[in-house]
Image (cartoon, rainbow, N blue to C red; front, top):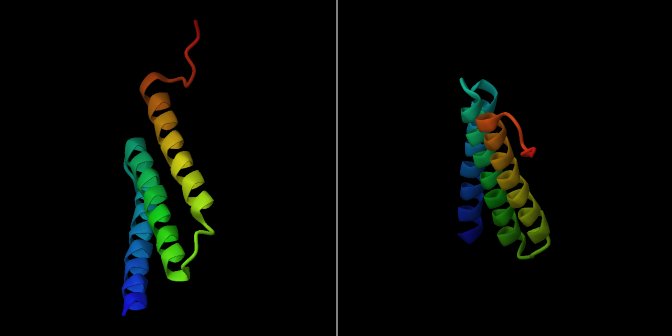
Length: 91
């Protein structure tokens, strides 16, 4: 029963990753694409988490950490670049 629930959750997460990927490709604005890629990264973290639960191991915990950090830093950097036009302030 538990493995069935995990498989259904993975199927839903895979479908939502597909929808986020299409939004990132077809998004009308750059901000939509940034939001879609950030959401894609967060859903990927959840998907890998469900894989860890189904395998009953913590083998991918570092992968989850790296993907989460990269998604956050990428979103912040792109948002700052689009808002100001540069990433680093020059004095």
